Every structure is written in C-alpha cells, then in structure tokens.
Amino acid sequence: MSNQMKTLLLKTAVRTFEDLGFLLPTEEVDDEQAEATIQASAIVKFRGPFEGVLVIRLFGDPLPELAANMLGEETPPDRQQQLDAFGELANVTCGNVLPAIAGYDEVFDLDEPIVDWESGEDSINEPGEATADVQLGLDEGRADLLLYVHGNVPV
Amino acid sequence: MALNILVVDDSAVMRAMIKKTLTLCGLPLGEISEASNGCGALEVLQNSWVDLALIDINMPEMNGIELIDEIRKRPDIADLLLIVISTESSQTRIDFLNDMGVGFVHKPFTPESVKAKIMEITGVQNVESDENLVAQDSSSDF
Image (tube, rainbow over all chains, first blue to last red; front, top):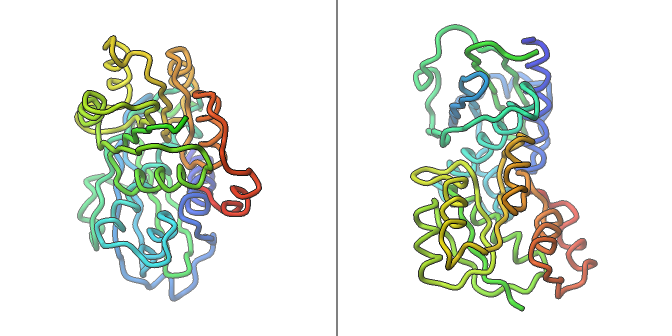
C-alpha cells in the first residue's frame, strides 16, 4: 500500500502545484535543489477512517513565486500572505490525496494548516518514518511531502 | 440583477482568489463581502442583503456545515442561495450538500467552474461575452 500511497501523493502534489500554484514541478531533483536550505513548512492534521498528518517542506525560495501566482499578481505579496498561500496549497493537497487513498465515499475532517518559516524536523511530533514521501523539483528550489498515517488504511 | 455575494473562507489568500475569480467571471456583481468563519458570516448576513454565499467547509469557530445548518434554521435567511467551495472530495458529503440544495465547487477551481455553478444556482446569465472570459483565463486555475 505504501508504494500505491506514494504514487497517489506524487500525482496529487504535482497536480496541485500545477493547478493552484502555476508551477511546473519535476519528479527529479538536481544537486542544487537537493542542497537548498529549508524556507517554510506546512502541517495539516486529518481525521477520518484513518488519521495522521501531511507535512510539506519548501526548500530554496519558491514561496514568493507560488504566492504571487496563486493571487494572480505580478509581484509577490507580503510574508504573511505567502505563508497563507502555502497553507492553502497544503490544505488542498491534503484534501485531495486522502479520498484518492481511502475512496471517495469516505469523509475526512482537516485541521487548519500550521505554517512556519524555516522550521523543519522539530515542528513535527511524528515518530518514525513517513508512510509515504515524495520530492518535487521546483524552479526556485524543491518541495518535500511527507504523509504520516495512523490506523488501518482501506485497500 | 447584480449579485451581492458573501465569501466565507478562513484563508485570506483564498478569499482574495475567489474575489478575483468572481471579477473575471463576467457575471453582474454587486457588493462582495467577506467573512473568515461561520460566526462572521452570520453577522454579515444580519446586517447586509446577500444574494449568494460561497462557503468553505473547514474553518475555525463555526465550520461551513454548521453555518449552513444555522442559515437553514433562520427564517429570514433560510432561502439564501449557497455554494460550497472546498477541497472536500467525499461523494457522501457532496451528496449531503446537494440534498440540502447547496451547490458544490471543488478546489482547485477554475473561473469557468465557478461561473457555471453560480449560473446554475442563481439562474443569472453572464453580462460579458464568454470569448472575453476565455481570452483572459485560458491558463487560469485556482
């Protein structure tokens, strides 16, 4: 299931970055993207047939472009709006990946996204490895997505 | 008929995106109000005339489902036209909303999908040509 979950997470993430953020993510990450430092992280907790957390970490400097694209503006908005835009992207990604995994008859409730600048591992209180994780290359850096699932996932 | 629309979403960025989308839709717009949760929406509805509310589901304090329940209970606003704009993908919940006479638009949305649902729910026709909308927004998804 974790391979299938990884595929669903990847497809959902690519579609959301494209449709909502007007970015063109790649499934390959080059050396520069791999070495980029963390810019911001977003966490969305969810409950339903199973519960858990989706974490998205942005590395490099993709956030100004992402937020400007989402708002349809030429210039990036202020830092708070950039975080808000990132939180919305995380929310939409989480809301779309869960039914893809669990089935479209299942109902999930999502918490408000928690978004921080430059916070990494310390902001996640999840033991062990993520159930599924993917990396996306972006023009200005990269995005790491980690999905932690607790409980039985319907197959 | 110009539509007075209330946009209810806890994300200021999403409210801005929806408002921008509305202005691109070519529909006759009156006043566009905003609220960041269900409680704020009820305050707006108490003090202003609103034809249509666009409502998110996941919000703090009073979420979208609780807001819709509250609206349907109040005789003065029970007939308000409602559309949920949400990441919700559960067909169970979408069917529940449809049974309550509430339209649904999935996030990420396009100007075309928002416009089509508003026209379906309100019966209002566009005032600008579709050609203009397509020219402006052929690459736009929100």
